[in-house]
Image (cartoon, rainbow, N blue to C red; front, side, top):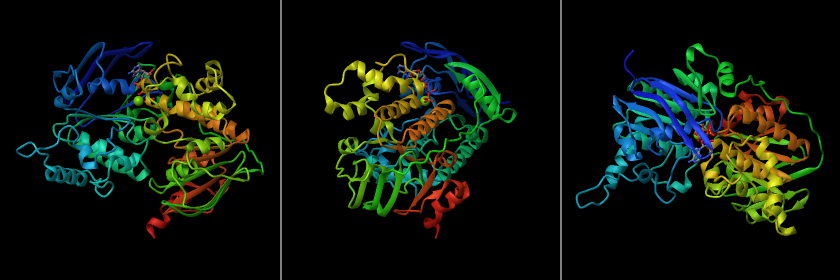
Length: 499
Ligand SMILES: Nc1ncnc2c1ncn2[C@@H]1O[C@H](COP(=O)(O)OP(=O)(O)OP(=O)(O)O)[C@@H](O)[C@H]1O
Ligand SMILES: [Mg+2]
């Protein structure tokens, strides 16, 4: 075998109150995809950020292409040939796609002016070469990009000259099936080009499909380094969590007649004439392609966007929701897909972030005391196993998956009548996923109506009483649980865009 392009030896890293990585050693060879797996907070992003120069290691050594990598800064890491496609893409809202891709390194004309032409040509050429042409437009502003498009920009940004090792931190959590296939195509191309590739994902079937080796971490400690072809998913899971997990999830049956949400002839910039109902205790899944308008529907219901027509009733009463405060007052909760931008105040503590909705819901009865906040929220922090050294830790310092759980905890604690969950298990690990399903089931049994948007079909099929498929500004008739198959749903989602 050729020598490794990346050698990681005995690397350790601590943060106040947490040993994020201990004694990690692993190699990546040219043309090899090494998957890096572990539960939320296991230390995966920490390793990648050490390689990218965002963090400094405390112990050990990294050798990149034969040179000891100090990577004292992100710039040095880039110059040495390391690129990171981040878990949370960093996109400037007011810059175009082309500008975002070149951020900090615009090509310039003599006289120092930015060479916009060259920039556009390079971006166009790259999007075509890597198969992303047509999926993003050069002139779209960062603020108008979908999560999937942001990821594409982030990937393209990483692939500019001189890359030797590239790491993907959960690249597919906001991608559809087709986009994921495209990404695999890209990764195969990078393999053939002889790059070293590190791939972090919670989706083990992806890991099995795309990787050559799997390195497993548990609480910062390496627990396995296996050839993918010689390992199995259950084996990897047990190395991750230290126990076997039950497979699949079965919901309790709940039937209630009370209609919680009734949407009649709703229209908006993104929707025409949408009508559906969700009863108490019911989980209604929303399937569709990214861009089909599901997130926008959630935001219309939550008052972030305005409807242009139609009626929305909560428990029979017509609502006049103009903004999210109105929605909260009408007992609607919404856990958004894009938690970093919309869900959390990163410099505030876990407890402040988690109790925000409780606060709005209860503050009309007077001032909420700290103790009340803690008692309302901490059961959910425990149930979701949010990994944090304390309740006062800044949310921005939690791992990506744990940040997602804080957003969920907030809405679970607020005890809404209608809970809208947009990709609730995005970026959370296998154990926490099962926990989220259990919580959803419990909430449904307590009579909460749940609208669940998800791009993961197995999850929609397992959790939903009925599935509604959205495409082309409209929704399908609800598909009852017993009639819902993966194939049927995919065909419906593709339906109108194909015909
Ligand atoms: N800047 C920081 N300050 C303090 N603690 C941090 C910081 N960055 C990470 N941590 C902690 O280090 C641990 C490892 O976090 P890391 O982000 O590497 O996890 P991860 O494996 O990527 O998890 P996820 O799957 O949720 O993304 C966590 O306990 C996290 O809270
Ligand atoms: Mg992470």
